[in-house]
Length: 151
Image 1 (cartoon, one colour):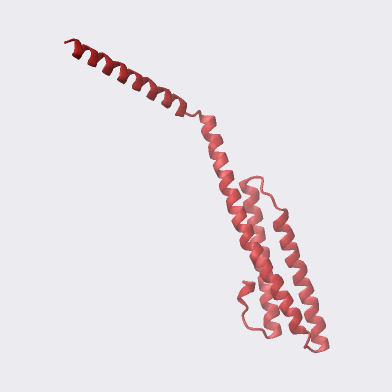
Image 2 (cartoon, rainbow, N blue to C red; image 1 turned 30 degrees about the horizontal axis):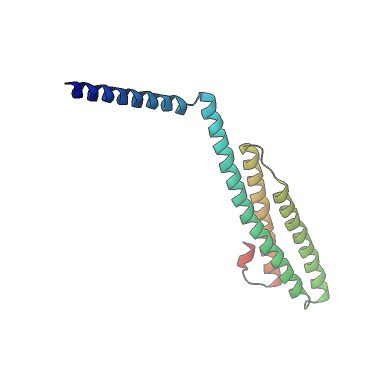
């Protein structure tokens, strides 16, 4: 009987301690509504920053491909007639300026919130599409086949 009483006492003590430690852990895990909202804002911000970094890398590669294409265009026009050469040089200079502007926009943009990021992204995509169309038109005019690096 003494042994049984000791086992019951230790069992009761053990389960009491276990119960107390679990409820302490639950209290520590419970977050206030403000903490939950702050965590959501933090996670959304981190996701947006990651998306921006990926977007910047993709467009940086496109801009670099455009720079390479412009260098190739300059090499090709060396053999052109003088009148066509001047026209091509002018168009290449315009494309180079647009490409440089796009690069500068990308480097200088820092989104403060999701609306700013979405607005910038839509505007940048439109400008990049227009630049790619201008590249395609120049290539067509110069008689160059489709160049995948400008897409």
